[in-house]
Length: 235
Length: 235
DNA sequence: TCCGGGAAGATTGTTAACAAATATTTGAGA
DNA sequence: TCTCAAATATTTGTTAACAATCTTCCCGGA
Image 1 (cartoon, each protein chain N blue to C red):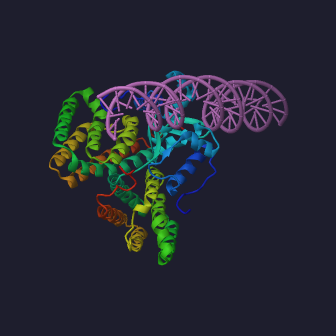
Image 2: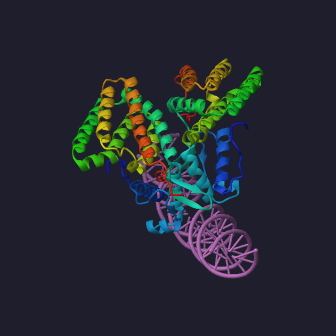
Image 3: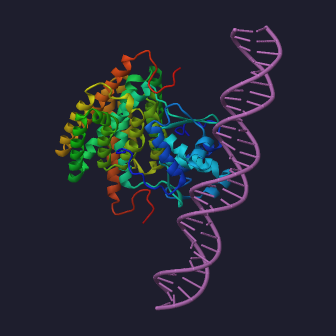
């Protein structure tokens, strides 16, 4: 999977469980709101509850799991409002990230980013390719930029926290026909600003890109108003 | 202590240890770079290593503790560069926060914020008061705004993560004579923008406020160039 | 039929002992 | 005296059992 970063052979058992659980959540094997029973999962992974609890605490810090004392853990379930909050924060954070990336990425990294967009363009032309793009390709672009910003705090916050949440809810986003193509065009614009080392413009374009995605999402949930908020357990 | 939020009687043992350890780190009982021995601390708290490890994982997610597998945990030790990164992120995050606060704070909250600044002004007039202000008062202002922004994601990121790190390094910041007074003036400006419900201006002023603090800090570490980076174990 | 109380069951929180890895000390050799 | 390696000691990672809490289901009463 392009986005899930390296599957490094983790040294400690808790870390391996963390990776496996995060993948299970993000790919949908565990769905938002699902109860997580420690004993059951521990048996499933062939370990004891200790390392599993350890992994759960880390997932909690990444906001992929919520825990209520003595009552247990569940896969996170965000309301529409919380998803809008996530977009608001992303707009500020990724705007900064993109400006820094324009200043700090190497020429080689920029060339690779360009290649990535070429591949995305080819994939968008095929129907299933558009599906792929919608699901993982878009985030791949953002991943690269976060890696290019040379600010470890930002990179971690985005790649390890925010983007994993976005993956979890990706099937809710950018559903409108034509959005993938438009998103790709926005990516190209951003790339050009980065290539010109125009940090100010890169920030502006990235903010607008995310604002567009948010507005698409807001229209989406407005359409099905009265219905259940996405990902929330039906009340 | 004004800043440390409520000392709620936590339900679970791990949470109580978390609070106690965070306080110990942030107040300086445990210093940056200090090794954390699980057995020793567990004995100190009168518990076993289980809940203590649990608390350590959570502190790790708040970036107050770093952990290397099989080698143990240490109190975080940020380089000058990492502190500048922290300021960069804060500028983006708190700018947004302040704009939202201008739109969403209640009139009552704004009045309380005004009272807080009055108290700070009185304290700045006394020498030791200036000291207090430099240490905790400044952050208190930022705490209130984060609580007023009505975005839970932002509030948590700032109050639970970033501000605690700032407290840890507060003795490194704003050391220049006159900075507390200037910071207080900036706070007043921000408050007025919030009272006018001028989100755009509030964001701009908050960003400038943090940028000023960062530049003060950058001059500070430039002065002692060649010396050890702040908080880093001397090489 | 609906509501509340309480016992039984399941689940999480905590503990202490064991296994594996890392740090430290000791001593031989140059 | 210094360096390197082996052995020892310390520390972290993991496990399984015990305690406390919550959830569920059943039953009696209105």
